[in-house]
Image (cartoon, one colour):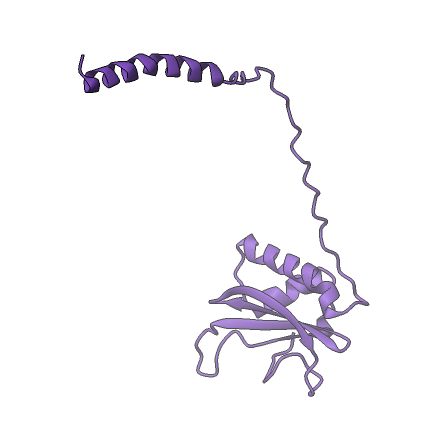
Length: 157
């Protein structure tokens, strides 16, 4: 046998032996078996959100959640919405009419106003609500230097 053939034969003879030795060194780890038992987990119980309340002696901030609650209820009721409807709804829910202002429903040229702004004064703070082409929004602010909540001419509430 020639030298290259002999080297090839020796190499081929040692490959199965090396594979056998290496196979013994690496034993596969047992695969975990899936569990068949299922544990029921209780869904967390949601904490109910309390219905907001009117705080007549509070500030505008103290009453904004209730103000929004009653205004959104009116909007969702499907009645025709105008300044008087918002004022009457607020009065029916405990707000004081004498502390309210509302902008006109119609512009100076007789066109329906795009938005109506209405307010309730609480001491030196005001709650302002706006309804119209922008949807509904509200904010709290300080009373203006005029002593009122709304800039411009407001109609009697």
